[in-house]
Image 1 (cartoon, rainbow, N blue to C red):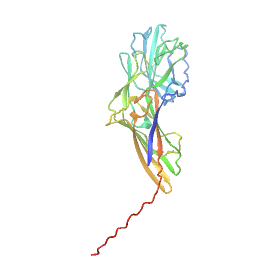
Image 2: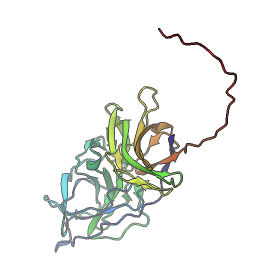
Image 3: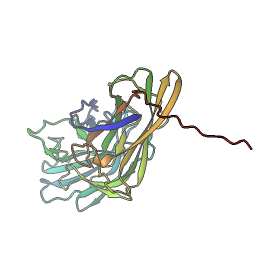
Image 4: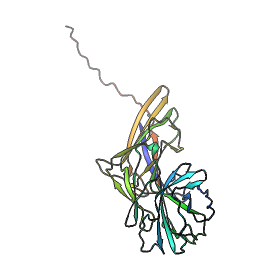
Length: 347
């Protein structure tokens, strides 16, 4: 009899080392044009998009005002859904903007990847986002904000809602520090021990009853935002289909494609719980035989550091611990007891 246990759901809240995208675009001759560079924040925990590549496109909105952001509501009166495109020389955009000459003028920026234009109401920027049903085509939703930037301090007073202390010295570029708005979900497996004569192969993984879309709204101070789910919690995703990688021993291996999901409270409903189903085969060598196995687990009742909630900017690693119970034998001899005779009639 084969058994499989969902060993644990390790919340990988460790700091991931992210490669920076720190190529700079030289300022044009008069030094006043707004130029941009990007950096995927190394404090991000859900690491998927670690650097930007050629032809990536960002969406940026900007608000020009006088004084500080106190009492101000963000609007895109300075840059409106401008597309920043990654080229071989840096980030370019069509409608050139220049730093205000007035020393009291300030600019706040809101940038998003992929190129999603926000709706803006009462200073709140909201992004509609849907997870691609195809796990291999999912995108990483990221955001970056800067407040109170000006020609002599081009990275402003706050980055992503966090106070810049001490203030940065003037730079040619506005450096956009991106953070992840999604949860990253990873599935791994290992064998409890080495099983002689048996090979375990993970073939399929499917998760069910999840939210697939929502609205992400940045705070009124342009800091970390919050999610509101959209639609029904009935979406399914397949991180692995027709897999052929084997589990050999107690070494943990990652299987399939990681999921980039909208952060959510997992369903504990008895009728439609949030589940993960794993399928695997056990291949015996002598004689040759393949046994197919399937197990389903409730994601909401697994051991999560954050309870039954997937939070933004975190990795959730679910580890399947596969145990095979060997068939063993014992034997004894029973008395036959008394012999009983009877006749058989032949017709």
